Length: 149
Image (cartoon, rainbow, N blue to C red; front, top):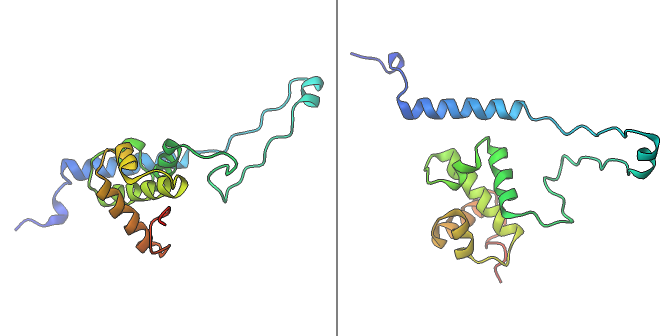
């Protein structure tokens, strides 16, 4: 009898393992940007001090983030690529990241309709509604999706 421990992973599992290892490497190599020093005294007088980094908030809330920035944030948080989230894969961790990206788009842009969000992600509007409801229940947010009247 052949034991499962002696079998090598198939091509799908090997791809998932390789992608996870690459994502861990990308996350380890992220460093905050270093402030540049002024070249001369004249530049030092004209330049303003660098803006402090805010680690608690992912966005500058004075400027509305774009939909691609929201998808990039969800991809970075889950250690995936944007192509994974925008793709058709039905792997659990990719689906969770995709649902969170859909939730972020709807919560930051409540005026967008479900079909508009579906066109961004290349999915049906009922799938968008399912993702929003699932995020609401998973995180015990509100009973209804953002922007509901």
